[in-house]
Image 1: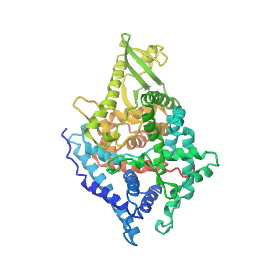
Image 2: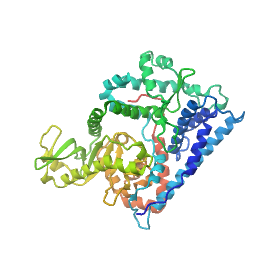
Image 3: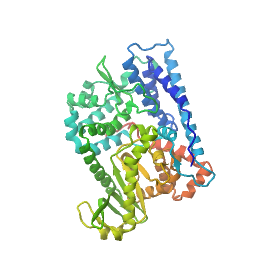
Amino acid sequence: MEQLNKINFSILEALSKEIKELAKCRTFPFALLYMHHQLLIGGSTMYFSIDKRILNYMISCLYIERKQYKELVDFNVNEHVYVYNRIICIRQKIGEFIINKNNELIEDSFSSERYPKFLSFNAEFVKIAAFLSSYISSPNDFLCLTKIRYEIFSSDIEKYFGFKICQCIKTIQTIRDLIKEKRSFGEDLRTQKDPLGQIRFNIDEIFYKSGSILDKLIISNVVNFFVYNSNLDLIDTSLFSRIPSDVYPIFYESDNKSYILFDEYNLCKSAYDTLGFQLSRKMKKDYETRSGENLENIVYSILNNTKKEYRHFLEKRIKIKKSKLDYTDIDVIISCPNVSIIFQCKMKAMTEESILGDENKIREDYNKSIRKSYEQGKKCKEAISNKDKFKFYDCEGKDIYSKFNCSVNSRCVIVTLLQENYPGRTIQSSMRFDDNDANHIVIDFPFLYKIVKKINNLNIIAMYFDFRSKIFPFQFLFYSEENIFYYFYYEIYIRNRCSVRSIMNDFQNDVLCKKIEEIIIDVQREIDFFSWGDVNYV
């Protein structure tokens, strides 16, 4: 398939620069807060993921400008109106650009044949996809996942960062409670004396809100762990670069020794992500080894705790030998009457450069993680298809050939499961990097956790991954993994339309795009982003 035409992103680059200029204005934080309120109360569902990325970029611009400029620009008395209107206009232009270009890329990806071809590599599509990746996990999900992921590292976290994982989660919960009390909807932000007061807090406030349970030093250590570091090189920050507020969501105000948090979702997500980045730097290989084993254990555990209706086989760390020699390993496997799902758990995630569409880095990361995982999965698939030529042992070294032989279906789907979340993974995993390269499914642990909570049925979960394997060539039509899952849930599982042809008929009749728009709305309704009411993560 020939390479798609390159997209001219100069319009987006110009709009990015305009946002940076607006960030110098005194009223820019109020415009940012207004946009955040719009997302909290629903906002535009079709453009939600795009708006979320723009919001995070605006926060990062605020970080940069407040560090660089002592004297902020003050246009005139009508600056409030000017900044608000410009931000609204910029949001609309960016949203229309992304949606239109994505539709153009999809149209260019199809030939006159009934079924689409596999995507050839296209860095432009990766950039567009990063804007369209949905946010499926709630803040509460991320706090729960943080506890699951880092509980075994609690003593290491205390050693390096000065707090335990339970103290980190309790502090974040308290901050969310505090901001919820201060938050004010329905009032004109332009008329408020200090609009940012509703998202501003200090250590004492957290201490008293916690009922004096948390030590002030512990609170300070947790809060400052997530504070933006002014030493970071952010001059080239753009809508396509790593956005600092994704990782360091708290902004420190030195003049009044207080903190500002524009987006509590980012704080909960960064608890899951940023602790891992920092532990990896401190512990290096030891962290990777222990974290990899922990990932296999928790994946097995959450699958084992789901409802099971029919005959099934579920096991972890199966060692496969051929002629007394080690051949390969299966990290986790589910086998139901119709299909076996092989999960290969990998610690190596895509780097920032590859997430952003750097062709060389995508190929490099692909070879180090995704391709390696798939090659391992292919060997597992070969062994399962020819069981009589191999020996199978469980994690304790016991021979389980007899049980494996009669319980495991020979038809296999390979799934690479990454610990870290990265945007646009559905598009990247859909791309053919060379003529001999076979594609497979790539997901992350937060997504698996979400669908297990949603379905809670091992056989239906296996059915979902089987469905994914059947629609692989055109999964990019759905923008993101989350939309594929909800299409499966509503159109295939609920309505029992388990046919690839029905999906293609939807597409050819222009029904699929309309359904995807409806699904996106359902996804946003399904996700309790800011957890009004109960902020308990368990």
